[in-house]
Image (cartoon, rainbow, N blue to C red; front, side, top):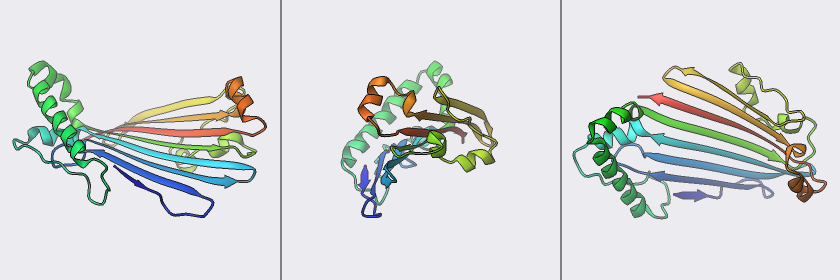
Length: 212
């Protein structure tokens, strides 16, 4: 695990965080990367959060299970590990538990399709307490890229917007979800706590399953 207070403007708060769970000598079984940026915006503040979560069944767990040698995993180079020995120990426990479970033919048959996949989730959230003419719709992350894919989310009205699109990709499956929330969509108690401050939030969530 590593935290990196990234540089930026004096009024900007910027933090990066990376954590990994190794298994075997290949890619980590699980990796999460977070980036959080907070900046003043007009009469309020803007928060931008990015997260990427990887679960590498095909690239990490399958090679580890195929290896006859006892693994000695290590964190990726350049990371400042808070507890590398614990991470390695957990990775070894997962490998041994998976090996024992997959020794049963029925479980092996059910698990084989999963062991051919790498799963990825990208989450991007933008929230603001500034007065925005377009509200949450103006905060929608990756709006131009979504439009290139033919995805044009509708604008939130009296109700918040939650929409999803899914389809086959070149090497698997992909799903895109969009959420838009404005202050008047929040519970009354939370609206009272915000007082006169505006509030808007928009999020894009992309899930992929890649076959290896």
